[in-house]
Amino acid sequence: MFDLMRDAGELFGGAELPGAADELVDRISAWERVIAHAYAQQARVIAGFVSQRAAEDRAAGVWSSDAGKYAAEEVALARRVSPTSAGHQIEFAQGLVGHHRATLAAMLDGAISMPAARTVVSECEVLDPVARRVVDAAIALEA
Image (cartoon, rainbow, N blue to C red; front, side, top):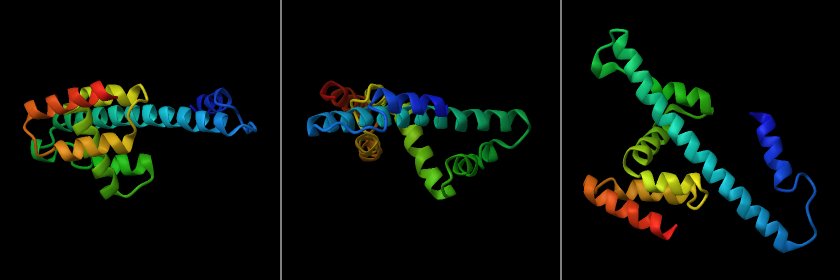
């Protein structure tokens, strides 16, 4: 995993900073696309983990209402954040993966940043599923 990060660093110029400002701006943009992709992958994994944890809990005989109850704490430990912060990340991940597939795809391509995707997911929470899909498709066309 960390070799991959080192390789990405070398791909985008390593430790040496070129003299031209335009090259540095290009690097900033490239890293932003990498970061968006990484956040999208993390969201996919988090949503999958929460679903899997709940399924495993139910299979182990945990009451349905308690299945997956401590998933936020596990995500918090993995991410080194508070359970509250992890809970917000889980809500975002589930919304992105479950209702905003085109926005997720745009993030994976590096076309939409995580803050932009978070805004889409948050603002569309009040919409019915059909309207969410319409907004998601429209945003993907603009990305």
